Image (cartoon, rainbow, N blue to C red):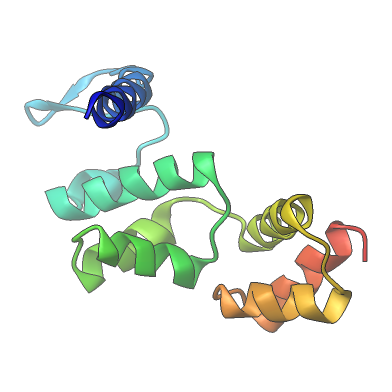
Length: 139
């Protein structure tokens, strides 16, 4: 029981640290906008904005394919439209994400080049992204 409580507080502390790292710049329509936020993001629904924020948080922690990120956001309760918005607007370079994911896999266990490409494709990366990821990981 104590262990669960410590983990819960740790998760809450991490979330607070991430959210407080954003610096509000100026009010716009009664609200605040964040650095790099476009007018398009300002026009997005609350759900879309939250999906975008969560997508960026996930990408700071680990690599995702666009398809995998949409799937994760939907699992978190975002609608299909919100999840796709978050993944599309997060600014990720999906080839670089594939390379990062390939390196993550190789740190855990050895893979042949074909096995690594197959795993990346299973994770939702396109064929081109998976091949790029394997190449950047040393194959």
